[in-house]
Length: 200
Image 1 (cartoon, rainbow, N blue to C red):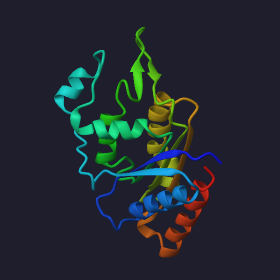
Image 2: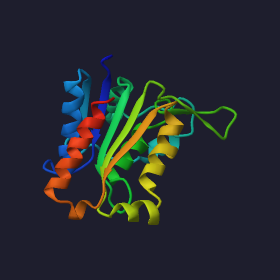
Image 3: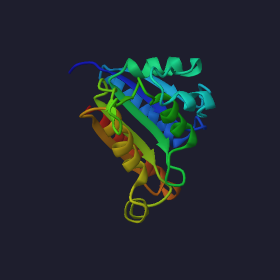
Image 4: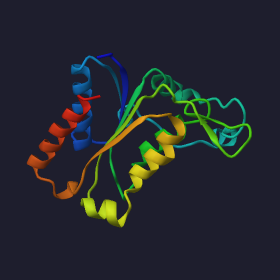
């Protein structure tokens, strides 16, 4: 097995949350397999998700430069070949801080470049080989998949990973019906999560 480098990004304001437990499970399992892991806790590191006017104005211009307050995170992303996002789904969507992470970090010159011919974008996160998502939903499986069409997976798989990384291993592991999940069900999910992560 070749040791790899992973960035695990956690988006939950409560350190005792299930999402935090899942992030710890991911980190511990990856480290036990000999991988290097960088945990980015967006709330703990006081990440500002707001895209500024200056950022937006420069977005389509040549030579986009990330602002000083996110340069460190950009470098952390560039240094890894695996990415794991851990968050709960709120209103069938990403938490605002995770959406802001994508808005401010997955930018031109980092995640993609604009095709000079126009109309397309060119993936730049070719170093990312694994793009995993660990999440939970308050609604049961049938509401998320049959009624809503699993919007978070579609957004992240088709709208982010496919455009920014090339031939990436995208996987999403979700605990559904979280609001009614028993302690046994939650522990069972963590067991399955560790087994899945150990296979990376």
